[in-house]
Amino acid sequence: MCGRMVLDVDYDDLGRILEEVQDLRIPPRHAFDWSPRFNLAATQQSPVLLREGAEHALRLHRWGLVPRWGAHDPGEFVRRLKTFHARAEAVAASHLSGPLVQAQRCVVPLTGWYGWPLRNGEVRPTYFCARDRRPLFCAGLWEEVPMASGELRTHAIVTSEAGPFVRRLHDRELVTLDPTGVRRWLEPASRLDEVLGLLVSAPAGRLDAYAVGPVTGDGPELIQPVGLHRTLFD
Image (cartoon, rainbow, N blue to C red; front, side, top):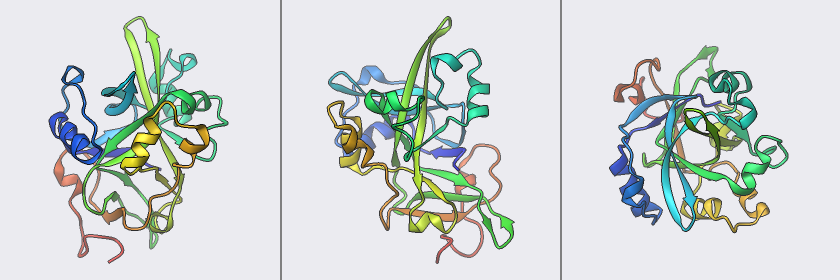
């Protein structure tokens, strides 16, 4: 599934997008340094949106969920158990994610993610993004573990079975939410059946995908299309 992702906006732009698209205002006191990233990997930090009391906040969390019992070696825990994703079908029953889906839900903003599907006998780096090229908002779960060096804040992104568009390339996709879904997912009072009902594949027309070059380094050239078509399905 997705082990690399892109968030090609800085903190100020992300705040403006949240206000314009999601009608959410982030208090200035929550600000942190963030520059565009084009090759974010699991175990690295990325912004997440969550509820803190009556407010919404952006926080930096490490990508890859780490519970208290895995905090002695977070990187190894994530690499071994692949906790950067949580499967929608099992999220409520899992001993790791079950308690979190009840009370520790977050939204992970990104502008796209990379996959490496096999097409015509060849593995081709592929970039998945919104058809309108605006940021996507993915359902996530977060955890916080006290450490001697400070709190370890981590998250996972929820995946679902792939819908008709992504299924031509991969069997799973990240769960992306529309503005109403974002609010319901973050609302503490939402019922469990209501939030689980949000964990479905993207509707037709939301996503696009196209071939890219090797995913090495970290710059805007990584998401430039290669070949004759700007989408794999032209």
